Image 1 (cartoon, rainbow, N blue to C red):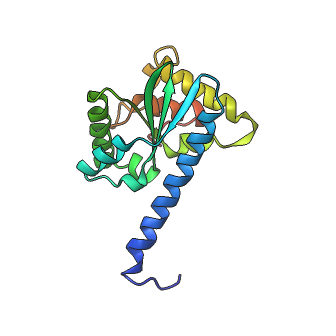
Image 2: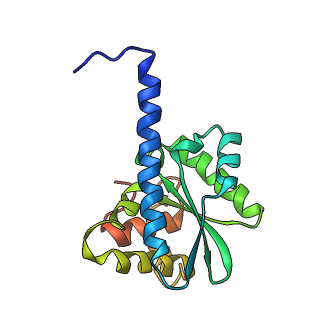
Length: 170
């Protein structure tokens, strides 16, 4: 393993986090942009605002605001390194609550679920499944979400189950 100076490590880590965010953002924007009835608006500055106020790194979160059924919804791609840390997830849930208090619907999605939107020839089918889950969480089995053992966004947990076949707690 090559020597990494102590000064370079934080920069290297920030670059990796930024690259993960860019990849997740790209997948979200492309997947949702291809769907009929969904208009991708762009990134959502409220995510960065609330993330900063809760001591989260906004550069790590992939925010995609879209219009769905004439209402704005923000999808936030959460890297695995944050999704599986209870303290980070609690902050993310506070960020989500703050956004919803402002009138912005917010969905936290785990990195592994988003990655599935970019795989194989069923991309559009998976993206439609995600949108249907957002539109009708009860009809899509939100009651079977796996996040009851630890903090999590039920829609993100159910998206993980539907798109990967695995629980988000694993």
